[in-house]
Image 1 (tube, one colour):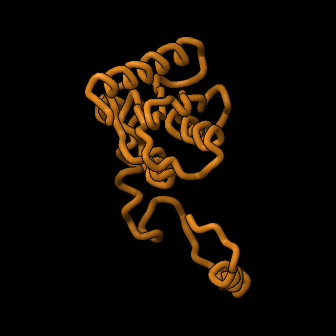
Image 2: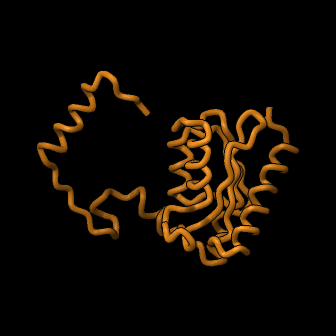
Image 3: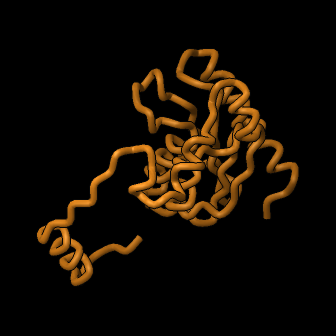
Length: 160
């Protein structure tokens, strides 16, 4: 069982990580720690600019490291501690990884106030594809549909 003291300790670890990696020039002021059963599975920090990877957000890098550490795509039962409320991409990754809890410090409004504004993404995602600002074309093909059919029929698939 996670206590308030545990939450405060691991969240402080994520916040300290956000500051130390920011000051070291790795990227923005974001850190994350993933914990399960009282053990830290992984840490992550923002490395967008240093890795030249727009997906290298703290939560995503922590999820990648934690999944590698446990040799599984599922982090069920884990808690992710983040120095800031996750952006839409990170929040989606948290759900995909089956993480059971999220604890964060700063809000998305606080992030927006220092130049990390995700409001556009929060507004775009719920729109139908053709209503989004990203030009999008749906071009179905028989081979794409056949590939989905092959997956549906695949006896040894690993569902996720």
